[in-house]
Length: 223
Image (cartoon, rainbow, N blue to C red; front, top):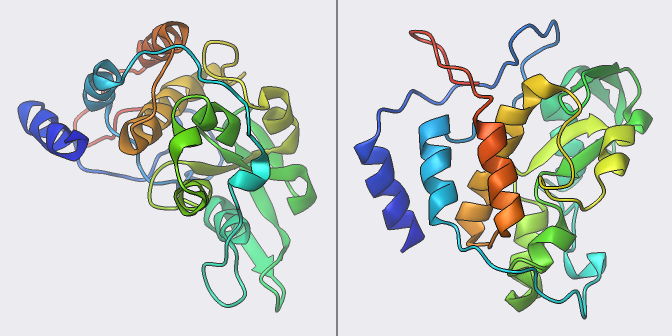
């Protein structure tokens, strides 16, 4: 149902080609997470999300979202994201990032050690649990926690990821204001795809962040 709605919404709006996301004014390399929907589509998706009170956290454990599953015989999802989002990343035989640099779109920091980098779930597992994932199977939760096809996993500074924890947009926004459009679009895309609900406060905060999206110039992806 939602997939059909998305196609119909996309057909009704003018959309731009999917491009790699590059933050305006950033000297860092492009962030190569899957391109979220352009702002008009994100707004349409947001308006289609179910608004509901948070569900109970009874039974929640991060272990219910098995993460960092193998993508190849040696590379797990985390190392895959570190290689994807970094520059000049060198890996050892076990696929672990040994050197490189990473630009954190949450707070604008450039990091030179993988130890200072966290792979953030745009929609944290705890937030997903209280917005509908409590009813999923463990296999579905594993797919969510390792999703590389949607803008769900992103390399950011460990400090910024820790400060966010499992807070939603109503309680936490990227300190780097220029990233809030990207963050909101990614959050909405993930919730829309997985049919997760939003609270009224969450929806208002997402709409406010989408208001920061600047109009696109000809031939340029919307930010």
